[in-house]
Amino acid sequence: MTTHVSTFKAPKGTYDLIPPVSATYLAVREAIAAPLRRSGYGYVETPGFEDVNLFARGVGESTDIVTKEMYAFETKGGSKLALRPEGTASVLRAALEANLHKQGNLPVKLWYSGSYYRYERPQKGRYRHFSQVGAEAIGAEDPALDAELIILADEAYRSLGLRDFRILLNSLGDKECRPVYREALQDFLRGLDLDEDTLRRAEINPLRVLDDKREAVRKQLTDAPLLRDYLCDACKAYHEEVRALITAAGVVFEDDDRLVRGLDYYTRTTFEFVHDGLGSQSAVGGGGRYDGLSEMIGGPALPSVGWALGVDRTVLALEAEGVALDLPSATSVFAVALGEEARRVLFGKVTELRRAGIAADFSFGGKGLKGSMKDANRSGARFAVVAGERDLAEGVVQLKDMESGEQRAVALDGLLDAVRAELA
Image (cartoon, rainbow, N blue to C red):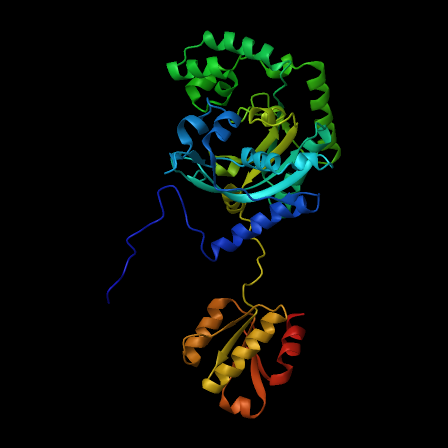
């Protein structure tokens, strides 16, 4: 037998989502989105590519995302675009373009879901194409907003059955106190044995060095000055309020003085969700406050906060904990027709069941009873509806329970009611 293999494969570092695995991804997205929808966040969708400068200005020209990982290209018309490497800058751009901040009711609360792209070294938990669900609260400086988003992410993860994740929390200060810390950190870093690229990064954005994962660098950072010791009174008070609100909600977190994350736009509150079962790629999501991003991309001052949670990483975390989601079957009823007249009649019944909100499928391709029942088993259907010429002559169909194997005749005209009663 000749085996035909497609000439094309998914690009390196990417993946295809196909059933049944795709059902888990959809369930994760829904679980993350559900508490957001209950909390006043409206859905927003942005293009898969943007002006390259949106990310250069917002994410930061010195970040690895912009300098090494961004898929940038020039169009036939001469425009310089980039596949979106993250969601916040795009969502804020869309909100500004639509003047949502001028319609009152600040903050503007938005959630989104989509694919993002970074040219990284592919490994488990880190892909060049990945899926995220994110949330942004735009236009208000309020510690309760920061706390709300952290609490909602915690709720989403727990609704999925995850328990072994940790929340790391820090404050990066603001434009008043961070420059003082920046200078102290640069003085410290200049005295270390660092390579040229790291020293160059230290001059442009020294906080990025704190995020260096190389052991040789991390060992030298043990005595680095801590940002918490340089926070101004306003930033200290803000951070303590965030901590108090999260604690009052029963959400457990850990203070992490080294947490800076990889984007330049963060100010004050920054946080990360990590799962120790994922090895080196332990972050499953994170975010923080970005009070100056709107001005960086040409908008008015709009203090904001948000997060993005990785769907891919969350699925891996579920696997690490051995959590199997209780996913509803894609099919409740599978119709098996024996003969042309039965095909016509049962196809109509399948349509009737679907219109009544019952997931139903049909044995296509003219297979015999044995082949059709195999299809019914593979579908995961709870019930099979089987009918031939003799059944139709008697005005009945056979309703078979695929779990118990029990089968009984039900009136053709009463099939919908019978299925409803069984599924109830």
